[in-house]
Image 1 (tube, helix red, strand yellow):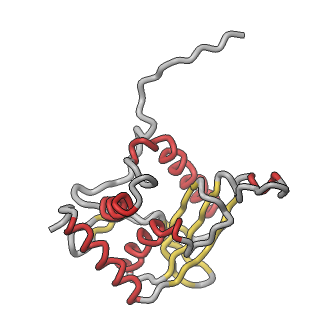
Image 2 (cartoon, rainbow, N blue to C red):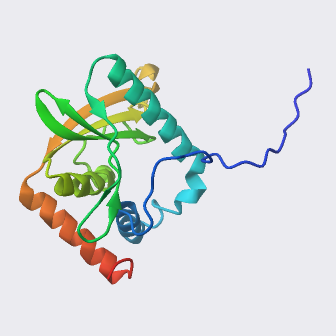
Length: 194
């Protein structure tokens, strides 16, 4: 057998046909905010294109599984705020009889950490924007943790197996408004919006 590395000149995200409006997106604002706060952690997304592609594949599979199991899940169209800022939640769903914004995440972060931990602040900022504008105070996170719980010395190695977590978060209207106002202020300071 002979194995030879081969160079294929292609973009791993080519063919991503999700609609994207012309102009500023909520992701431009919260990506800029988190890059400003933690530049060593939040770098240029282009450097993580294979991870972004894996996340898109994960979204596709999770959506397919939800529908196959009869769980309501609709990928909505792109929305635009009154300020002219576009946003695309992963889904709209109903869980335990209530409407919720749905977000599907694939992450290398440990499944030990809980939403509310600062490591998930970017996820929270993102979904608070969506909840605010859709006037839905709840969000469901379906997160795939690629490295499970990162087993510690002496723990069962299977804790490092990929794991799935589903959590619902409910916000007050004041929390949602405060987050949106903060994000707009950041966008104005950075010259992303006027």
